[in-house]
Length: 109
Length: 113
Image (cartoon, chains in turn blue, cyan):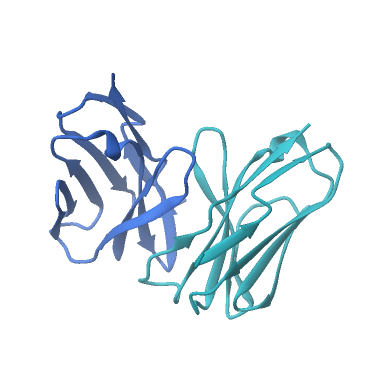
């Protein structure tokens, strides 16, 4: 079946270091959404990418959609404690939203 | 003003019992969803309703039965609860099924003893 693979499963970083999570789809996506889930919270929509090669920024967060619309990434520059949580991608294919397994961002003490 | 509200927030019950979770959204959306999130945080779609019609029905035991009395409500009834049903259940809503973001409720934490 259709899958969206998301890596890594976990990433431990020192505060101030960068963080990146990647999503790869087995099929071409019509769009891709990104969500953040804080510990004990619920997923919250961050952004949607639609166009091939699209890049969008939200302050320290940079989102990219690949040229073939099969992969996407989220990069956080200079992580802060408020960035802690699990980041999910969700790709749209044939009217279904296919979720990645999430990448948990952990800030080392 | 809570946009998507679920009740109860916590549900602790014995194996074999029947329980219901309720969800209401005040966003005026026409599509609602139920997700199951297990201990590994994987989000699995269970059901989706658009204008009260079932449009997604993933491989879920038939002990789970959704019901949408109107566009603003989607309830989930679970019969004969099993240990493996322990998880967080999220309700979500969106406007349409194609391009709009999903808005999630706070979740119902179900624990089976």
